Length: 263
Figure: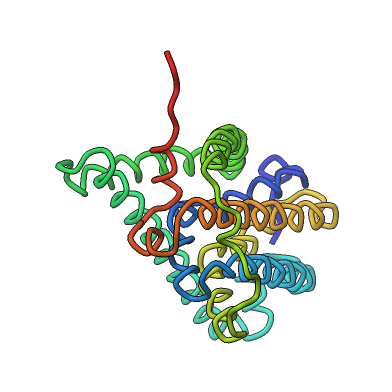
């Protein structure tokens, strides 16, 4: 697939695309899910899952480089235009279902935490309107929004993680590795769902300028998100007891309740 250079983005911007593909509404509540699988050893599962994603990134670059296009081109070259359209259609359905899942999660959080009486269709319309506004501007606009979506949350994360540390009990993490390999594997599976999103590379690959130079930024993006998720899990594990975490649906959001500012 040949893309006009005006529509392509610089290699270093892949870092921000990968970050925003992985970090989303899932970071607000994944701690409870993985802790249910492997207790407070689950943070190890996050690191293992991040390592697997690094391998997937390497495989995707190898695959897409041979096809010199996106995943649709890969299917066409392997199976032909007719048969290749079947797996391509399945992937489009997957992207659609993933988008619906994210929108529903955002609507649920907004209704629970902010506007409980606001109808879902109004929130959905507002979100989709913003999405259409960004997408209609082209891929470069989407990447620009991704860049801003990286800078602003990092400032919030620093504040959010500093306050709970005052009441953190790192002894909660001990003893380390006191769960079975099966339980750790279950935690890895749960973490994989949370940090999924790198598969978007299969579609935006042709929009990258100097693809070979972008590989390191893609791997750095996955490394950064893996560290972020690991820190998030550890902060939650040291702040909440296991019984508290079982009852807390969105541990990341609940951490905001401990922030106190004097006036």
